[in-house]
Image 1 (cartoon, one colour):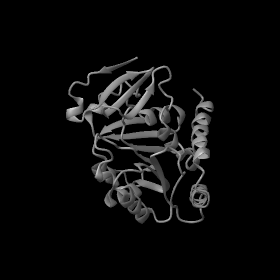
Image 2 (cartoon, one colour):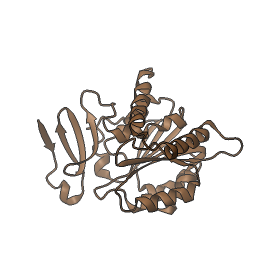
Image 3 (tube, one colour):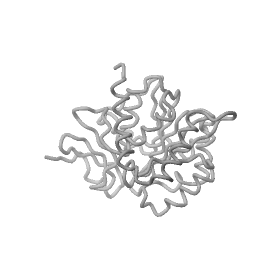
Image 4 (cartoon, rainbow, N blue to C red):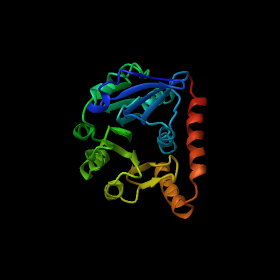
Length: 259
């Protein structure tokens, strides 16, 4: 059984559409193209595979002090990090006022000392965050996909500057995006060899991890990134294990939560 909420003009205007299906609240910009989902019986659960895959950043950075997110959507990652990484301060940059207006529907926490949603164009706002983020999650899709500004050389350079030394960028890019290869090339030009991905971890959502290395000896995050990059090159058939890894990461965080 399904129902749609206040979507009469949404498709024409590119505004978010809410619908309830099978116990889940879904956010879409184009009917049938799911952007975010919430389990109404368990609002903090990560329903979509790509969101679980992005949480693999905790393998590299288990205790980030400051997480910056580009794109709120239905708030799945924001809520999960707020609840299960209680030591982290979270800043979310969201361009759409219509998306922000839905935060209560998706049980997104109110703003506080450690959680804040900023109505801003991330491409313009990023330079203000220099040397402030331990982890930067880029998941800023709209009705047309990933805006070109969020895959530009300038944006990636600003992201690198926004990271602290040993900070990690996590980018969600569709494999069928016509600009996928140029974006990957720009990412590698910005971060050098310090880019990896877990092959096949979320289907057509390619989750890329890029590290801003700290000066001095290799850190645990850099050593892990190098191992993941090597494993992906030597054993390309790791997709099933990588999907299990993402589920394990999320389950471990939920299990170890003090709440």
